[in-house]
Amino acid sequence: MRVLMTAAVAAAMAAGSLTVAASQEPDVETTVKDGVYTMAQAARGRERYDASCQRCHGADLTGGAGRSLTGVVFLRDWTGLTLDGLYERMQSMPPDGSENLSDDAYVDIISYVLERNGFPSGDAELSSGLLGHVRVEGEDGPGVVPNFALVRVVGCLAGDGHAGWQLSSASPEVRAADPAPSAGDALAEAQAIPLGDRAFKLLYVFPSPEAYLGHKVETKGLLIRDESGAADAVDSINVTSVQGLAEVCE
Image (cartoon, rainbow, N blue to C red):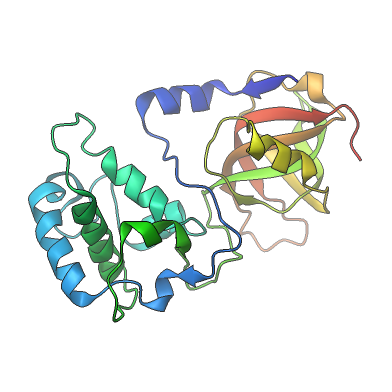
């Protein structure tokens, strides 16, 4: 089976600038709206955040480019994903590996991040064992993938290098955990996804995916919604990888 990974994602992964989060767990019912931490835990988390995280992410959690842990950036990066992805991301900080915190400290910091994002507190503390069972969810609910999120779509490759590449008969976009082509169980899952009635423009596809023309493919990339309101509006995907799933599209 042939795969194509764009130069853009390879460079982004090498530079560490592309966030890779935990995969979705469709059967998870608990969300950050359900009060999964306590205020006392968030207070501890603030102390630990101020001591270890503030220098990079700022006193107000907004940080610099790519460092915000609050507001629309937080929801863009984590909506639809479970908190274990945020935990794993925090464990890689700071990039130089100069400081490692205890598991409990990371969980307390996550509680503080949730509190600062306006998610309600509850009666029981968040624990590391619960992180994979709590999904981040914004005001729009679990079914809306945020703009500029990393997504996966399965569809039929159409178009050409001059007029542009497109996906037709495509499945709805879903959050992706990894910008690279799926492998193992994730690949089997992609192969089982049925075609749909969506269409997407594919942006910055390099090298050329011409070998997959007319094939069923898995495409990953950053979702760019067409918010013009036009009747013929078509969303786009800034492509990170294309993988052939079948030589026919059905």
